[in-house]
Image (cartoon, helix red, strand yellow):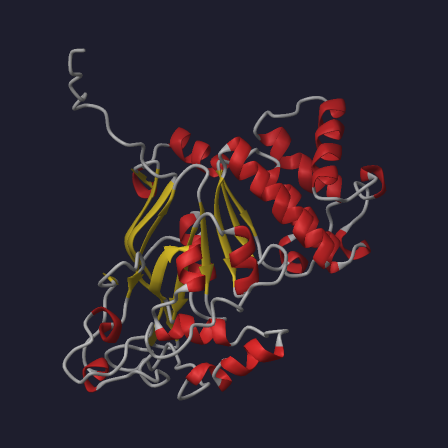
Length: 363
């Protein structure tokens, strides 16, 4: 058979959303607060990227940059290869429809003077997805049923103050689904839900990803949720505005490399007493205090808390680098990627990882 010549014009599809060296600096009382520093990540159709880290690590600010709710101080944000700042009005409208955001706090994100029906119908009418009253009612009922607010007629006429926190959060998820988005950014979208509803909603989102090709950026500080929802995707660990480890979720959870990732996993409660006894108390951190963004440590910002810190960690800022060997993660830790001559152990060799037990339960 004759050999086929590759088409030089054929290029791999651009990711749905891409952050390229994006940074966000806030100016507060004469000081610069680097909420996000030089973050690069991408999410394609049908992919899921989970952002994990402590409160204040920059997860929500990163998500807001991806959603176009804030402009980066430096770097770029692209949708299907197109820089957001260079989009035409029509391209911007398409981007707004394709990328939807589920806010963390449903008490603040839902308009208190709009009913559930009004909240869900406005985007439907604005984008021409439902024109008649009957079409609006049918679509609203479908959305409420999707998020387990049934029977829908019992909820469509309610206002936010008439619902519980979990019900409000489900309305927020329904609003994010109104325009059939291609990328859904979920910021702690299940934190107020009961366990049974939480699992049902995550399964519904997984179905959207697998059957409709919807991409996800899922933000959480709960590693059990990251393991459950993003097991087939990737996880990025953030600390003080920077990504310190990124890779396939299975590897990040079961074989963490960065000492901060190991500390997060060691902090997950373990129901098995024998496994719990194997974990180091407190994850082995030197300090529980998180440095202030207004007065960041020199060099690696994690070194004041890191049990593996060396002298060079106080002077050199680490960058994401591949880990030597068979490990597939990229890690921002010189002790891991370049152990040096002092013979100190890497994160992987410093003890048993917490991944086998951490986050193993159903969220």
